[in-house]
Every structure is written in structure tokens, then in C-alpha cells.
Image 1 (cartoon, rainbow, N blue to C red):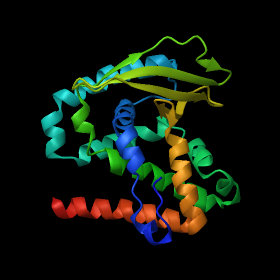
Image 2: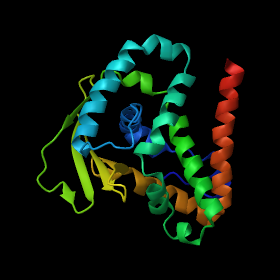
Image 3: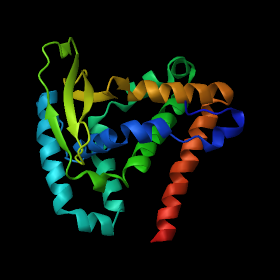
Image 4: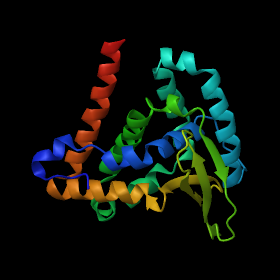
Length: 228
């Protein structure tokens, strides 16, 4: 459990996500760094297979340049993450009843800061996973209506047991497949954030959560500028 009580709200850290989901979200964000055009007709399996191969190859080839200028990774993610992830659906699932109670301004503010939080947490770690390998597994029950789950094994090397990762896609009104959740060994990333954020909102407020995320995101950016 991330939350430790009211006194610890400002110091909440996504420990569970960093520990269990860090590698997977890094790879997910890597999948997002290949530009996807509006008329993308690929299946979810093709998205995982093709982009993981291409991007991991680029990551290895451009490693030194990316290490020299980490902002290139941020820019790359920001350019492609919105067309691929269904961030609004993520926001609805994470906030639950608080989403229904929220104003449009609060909803858009949360989605923006949540996206920037993912980028902030995982961008620095992306360079460490150039040798990861993704294997798409067969699954006869992977599609149910507009939902499609891609079961994979993520091998990060070092002799560790591959992680069982499921990417959950949904087909939207534009007939586009977008990721709105992923699970690692059966544990959902969205549900994990929902547990943490709902507890924080209960103890403070949705506005306080959005402000905390915004301050962390902006503070991280300021620290990078000073470091440069």
C-alpha cells in the first residue's frame, strides 16, 4: 500500500508501480515512440511485435546520443503517447466515482498530469532496457467484442524469470486500437493507481492530488534544467 496517512500525502511515491511495473511501463512507452498515423490498421499483436522490435533496435543504436540529452526521450514519448494510449479511459478507471463528480477542468487536468507523471517516472529508466525481448503468446480468448488482450512474456535478461504481461486494448469509435491498461503477473497497473489515488483523494481532495502531481512534474523539469 502506497498511502501512509494524511501526514505522508505529499511524500507518496509509486513504490509498487516502480518495483513491479517499472520495466513493463518502460517497454510500453518504448512501444509508443514510433509514430502511429491516423489510419493505422494494425492489429494489437502487430503493434506489440513490430514496434517493440523497431524501437528497441533504435534505442540500442542511439544510446549514447540519448544519454547525452535525456530530454530527447521525453520529447519522443510526448510526441507519440497521446495517439496510442487511451488516457481518458485510464483516467475514468483510475478515479472511478471521483471522475463522475469531477468537472471537465479537473478531468483534463488529471489526465495531463497523470501522463506527465508516467513520463517523469520512467523516461530515465528507458535506456536500461534496450536488450529486453517481448514474445507474444497465443491466446484463443484474447478478443471479446471491442476489447482485445495481448498476452506476452517480457524477458529483461540477467537470468530472471520472464514477466507475464498483458496489454489490454480497446477499439474506439474511430476503429483504432488503443492501450488503456496493462497487467504484470495478473496485477493491473490501472487498479494499482486507483487504490493509491482514491485513498489520497479521500484523505485530501481531487484538486490536491492534481496539484501534487503537477508540482512533482514541474519540479522534476526544473531540476533537469538546472542540471543542464
